[in-house]
Amino acid sequence: MSTFTLSHLDALESEAVHIFREVAGEFERPVILFSGGKDSIVMLHLALKAFAPAPVPFSLLHVDTGHNFPEVLEYRDRVVAAHGLRLHVASVQDYIDRGVLRERADGTRNPLQTVPLTEKIQSERFDAVFGGGRRDEEKARAKERVFSLRDEFSQWDPRRQRP
Image (cartoon, rainbow, N blue to C red; front, side, top):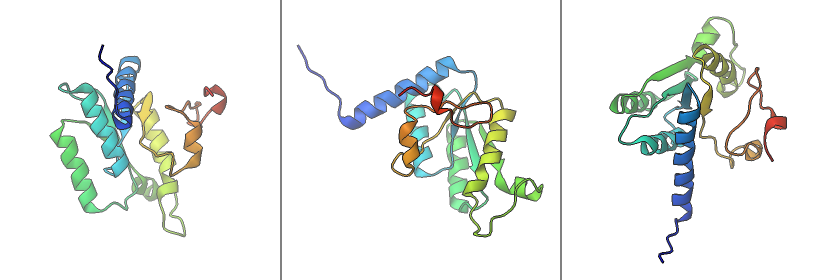
C-alpha cells in the first residue's frame, strides 16, 4: 500500500483549489479582488489552476485608489487580457470627484476604499468575494476562518461565524 502525503504548501494549494470550485458551484456571481499585488496574483493563480483548462468562471474586481504605479495597472490589464477575464473597477477618485469621499490630510486612500468596494459589490450583485488578505498583516483576520460572513451593511457578523 502506498502512503502518499502532500507537502504543507501542496496541501494548502489543494484546499484553496477546493474552495474555489465549491464557491463556483454554490454562488451565482463570485468575484476575486485583484489589485495586481502579490496577494491577488496568488489568488488568481490558484483560481486559474482550479479551473484549468477551462476559463475562470468569475470576474475580477479592482478597487483603484488612484495611487497605483502605471506598471501595476499595465500588468493588471495584461493579465486580464491574457486569460480572457472580465475586470470591474471601483475608483476612489470617482467618489472624491463626486464629493462622496474627501481626501485625507495624510494623503492615504486605503481607508477610502470601503465605500467604492461595497457599492460595486451591491451594484454588480456579487454574492461571494475572494480576497487575499494575509493574517500576518491584520490579526483580526485570523478570527475569520476561511470565509467571512457579512450582514446587509457589509459588516463582519462574528455571531454567524463558526468557532
